[in-house]
Image 1 (spheres, rainbow, N blue to C red):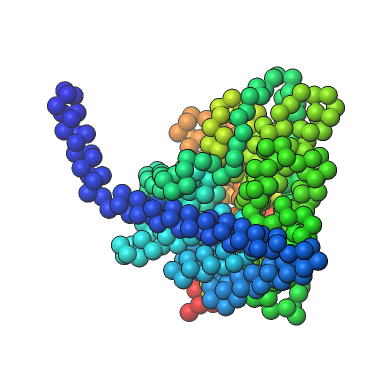
Image 2: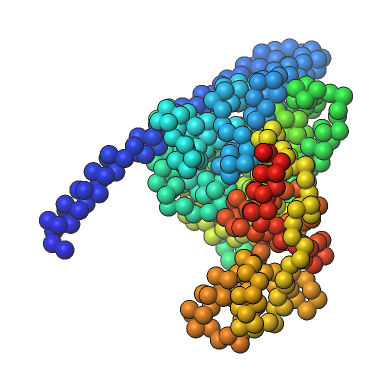
Length: 568
């Protein structure tokens, strides 16, 4: 191709982009999300500082009564706004956005923007031990829904803008546009989508740009100058940090669900009043340990500046570890993302301080930052987002290798301990649900699954498997070991691919099967099965018993047929 031909093709390409509405829409989503996040952040900071300043002039004996009253009222206002006007704004907001994008939850309503904003300010601003990033994500998603409504977009195009708004909120919150884009792909969509990537990138850059314009080119935390260079003999400490973060992160997830169950058992207390209960308790404990209040940004800044002693670091960690799950489980509008980063920072700093006490020369600030990524990875199970976010916050490439190492190890430990991603797990405790989702939640998988399932031995030849498939015409077949335990799944497409690749027909199916089938248990509800089918983009799930034996198969067709019968 000559130069002129290349020029005209390039010119035509950019003209097509210029004519495309998606650019304008993505920029609008980014700008609106960025402005909302800025206002949300500044409102919370102003209210929190105002209360602390005014309450500080009173003697401690007065504060002992006044501050718990303030935090209780903050929780009460948040609870009334959430449960009386827009119940979908309870908690983090990230699980609800995931439900919306999976199209098995209620759609994003515009009123949720206002409710999430003011409920979040009322709760977090008065001191509830919650983060603002979860509400920010829902605010961003609401911005995407607003722009989609203006342009009268539906379906996939609407989902693009909702996802773009969520990513833009993360970008504006942490001044990390790359992490915002990756968060959408890794957490919300859980797959790489070239069609979605363009709008997400445009929105995250726009949101980060507007945030930098008003707030300056500063990360979410005040990061000190890091002069410490990692030595090969220090690698074991980062490995240890990864292991400890994985274990403690799993315990943090269990603590969240323990508190959710605890609040569910408080049947005598109305839902709208439960955030007030959390406000009262955090108000009492916050008087003695104020660093557990709010999102935790100030506490992390002081930690990185070296202003906390060894014992105080431990006390703050334990206090935050207990307070955040309790406040979150109450249903108040607030998230766990920022508190998770805070806990990771304190854990990393504490562990490195122990090593320094033993005579090892380390920089605790470096380990605090690595701890952020490792703990986030263990809780949210988003290792790539964790690595990129810490890297963007520090802007220092020298520590990328230990960050990657600790994050990978913590994620592996969490997986081996059987911990699911927190936001995915929260989906099944998230309310309210659509009518269809409510129906699916009431029925167990075992009620509609197919029990008569052809199972292939792992040692069966590809040729024999192909012959059985031609006779039975099923879509997928579980593969089991000699002990009849599930080891994989194989489809007709797998067989065809093997033939095209020239793999011998005498080879065992074990060689071409998928060793990681998506599974559910018979006693789980169909709602969970439906969500897994949507997010993994598959047509069938293997139903397995707790001992790994195959109980049956449930398909998308089974669920749709069941819904048709229940919703004529």
